Length: 268
View (cartoon, one colour):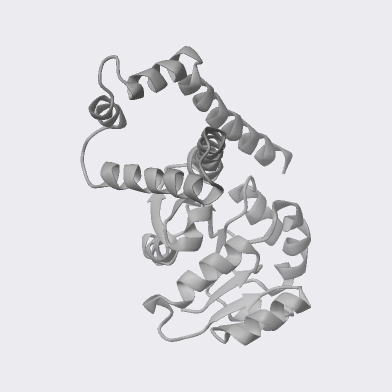
């Protein structure tokens, strides 16, 4: 199986590194294409990829092609690679808002898997939602899923609407976490903690809470009930959040990201 990644930006390189270290390539080097001379030089120095700067040298060789360019570069990329694709190739899109139909029409092919990755893939803790066109076989989809899982976990969703919904939860979700962390760190600084101590207090609290959640079957509400006692400090904080409608605001934020993902797809 020969795998090519088009685009060596943050997400493209993240998936390239994960897949290159996996056994699924059968000791073949992953192919990586980019247009930046500076980036290509760095990739060559890394030594773990077959690096390409011309489309016609790499696209015809690949069995599975990951598209990891910015959505606004999609049309230009499609135009450039269309003469070199073939109907047996599987195209896996890491682009937000670009529909399966747009990719099929842009490239004149049928086999497309559309995904929604997220940033924690950079540390092997990502979650990638994915769905496929009807022309992708079960065996082909399993191959793609194995590759996606090299950066964390993947979940198969029934249609593209859930890809857009995943954008509102997992795709944009890390930013919501960072927003909450930033707020807590600012509170710690205001209380007089040093910058380093504020960082440790917040980061360890988040890491510990997630570990507790993952290692049990308890719901977040149950954990909140265990931490909070009537009339206590934690309950005072939770009451403040409830009074300020924080829960509903977070839900609205997730839906705002979902709505925007849908709009991007329609614009494309």
